[in-house]
Length: 55
Image (cartoon, rainbow, N blue to C red):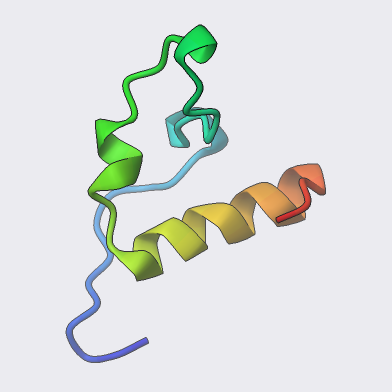
């Protein structure tokens, strides 16, 4: 982590948005689209380790 990376709050599985961006998923995907790369990979790592979801 670089010096400019700051953590705030607490990450729990319920806060991770669905990665399914298809129209039938009916999700608001703005959050995923605007995440910084390091935040996206942090969320992806949590999903992978907790749910063994392949990326």
